[in-house]
Image 1 (cartoon, rainbow, N blue to C red):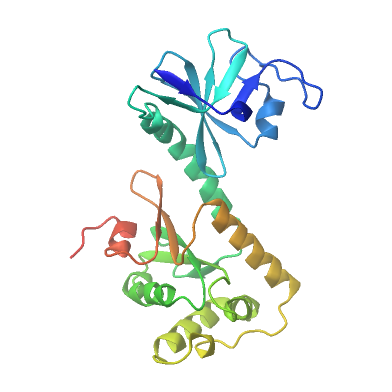
Image 2: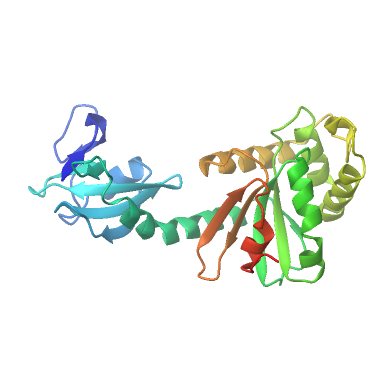
Length: 265
């Protein structure tokens, strides 16, 4: 086995002139200070091919392995490969961080300024990053009507304004409405019924002056979307029957069947 890491990924227990001393709190891991400084969250120990003691960690929804070298005083953040260049611990790392990363992500989603569509006690909940000018977002809204109206699904729309010049103004108009749920529904219906027109003219009229609260909410939503590595709308996030967080972007065939855990008709 070959341990591969760039020089800046190496973690040593020696002191340098411009960095705090890095020591292991228990002889196992680098110091809690170092881990916090690097933005690393430890998921726990993991089995490791290659003989090095290993821990699974993550940062910004990215799995990161930490390996302790045999001297017990140095660590490496990097990749262990075999003679063919295969990452021998990739599957183990992904399995170790999937649940804790998902729990953190779900908590982050719950803390956003989302707009509920459907009953709060619906047995299935899905968060959706939604741009008002996204035709596939509006398609998802329409396709979900039977499930939403039957009380089986609640969509929690996290609005972003990234696709067109009017997107942010439209998203702000929905957020600032007295009844955002109704404003979103009216926009989706108007957008769907106005085929052939320029997208900027469809649906709700964009606000020309966006309130600070709406601007902050939209900025936070985009920041979370970017931190998750999502680059397209709609981006749908839900939990499967095992409680593991699932993510899809766009409108792939059978999306709502996947969300609901049912077979495609």
